[in-house]
Image 1 (cartoon, helix red, strand yellow):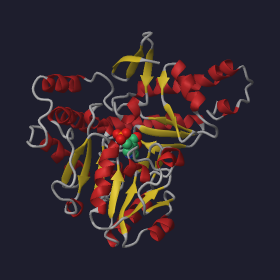
Image 2 (cartoon, protein in one colour):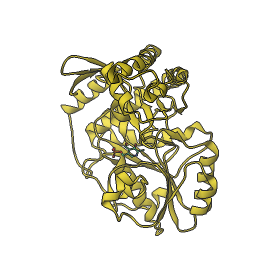
Image 3 (tube, rainbow, N blue to C red):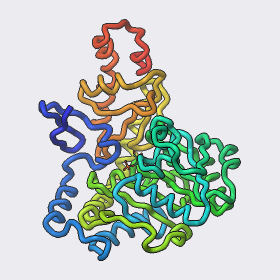
Image 4 (cartoon, helix red, strand yellow):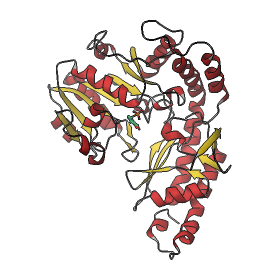
Length: 378
Ligand SMILES: Cc1ncc(COP(=O)(O)O)c(C=O)c1O
């Protein structure tokens, strides 16, 4: 399938077929496609200045940094070009403390660079590239005892996705995140919150750890929707973390350029306006998905439907019927609708999913008891 263009929550292929886009470029196209204020920012800045290097300030970088720091409850920002690179910066900063051990969560995903892979437990991503960074301990999600056993005064950082994305839309619980905070503080380690997928409004909060009152990490990484598809990431630090790394110890040719930053400013404005819709339409999405009688995880515009069989065929069938979702961790249907989605879009998606049981039966020529069909609660 080759995509030619998009508009709002819709994508179109070379045959002119319309798809309801409920995966939004795996969380990147949070404002949908062809959003007027993004198009305006891109067009205006393309004719003004695209790159000026990190030898100079530009008009937008400081403004985006201030916004991100204030949204996260932190103080300093380093701009990158991707989520993986933002994680690299976070890991380098934590290791600049002189400590080398890292604690990460099983089934987490942090990107494809060597450092990011080192804290990603899934063998399928890391095996061909081992040995990776030494000193990484993986602990099961939401198990406080295992976390307590893994963290010591040798720990440089505890790296946690507040809601795991690729790992099957698995939220960290409030007691667990509070324990991460407590252990990081007590052992003088850094809590690195990887908010690449679950942050920047996806849950109806600026960052997913803000679902819980008063919790602030030491370092936050973000990317995906930050500049609406123009590559831009950021590592956001508190004072204690920022003090660990010095000028010149990390750098990026493209990071924080005027083009990406002007677009990011427009994105952040829109996200602020859309937070109430993300919460209300997100809650409606979760309510309607629960009609299938299967476990639903996530929050806001991030939903995972736990199947009891692999979900690849459901994703393909949905695509045939004009709905784009994906399957992660083999058995989890993942929905990441754009923040502009309405209840009518949710209804359309649910109707398509409902119709799939019949469609899948026709496709396979099999009888009613096909497990795939049953697993959609049909
Ligand atoms: C939680 C998380 N961290 C990091 C990354 C890596 O981001 P990128 O592909 O921009 O390097 C991803 C990508 O899916 C992600 O979901």
